[in-house]
Image (tube, rainbow, N blue to C red; front, side, top):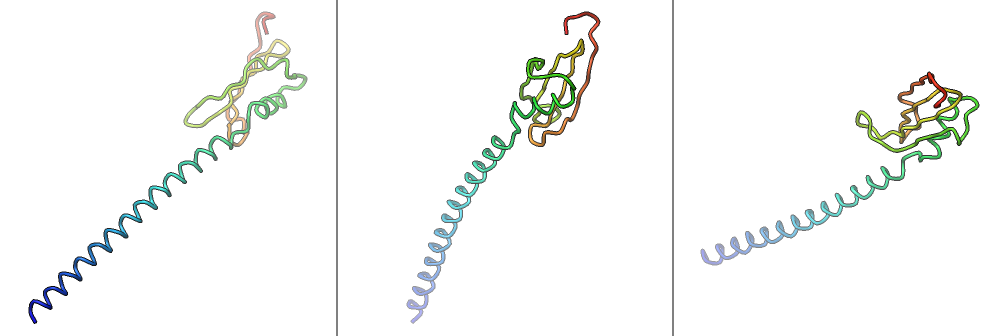
Length: 121
């Protein structure tokens, strides 16, 4: 009788161990898949959420009356103070305009203008 109880207890412990290991393995597999899915989604949102060069150029041109595409001398994506921005430069009417435009929202986060001392602008 004692042997039978001991055998049932050992069998029960073994079954719990196997069930726990299987459950743990499936959770681990799901969490790895879940993390990978999240990473892919984050990358897609990040890459697809920028306003683009054309939109950044249009935003900057709205702030410089009379300027057009031919006056835009530079537009590139850069990281400034932890955020992605389009650095845009316009040279028009003897003045150089520089804009930092938030790559996600399109907000002008910084800008400056400088009058030329000579006719190089």
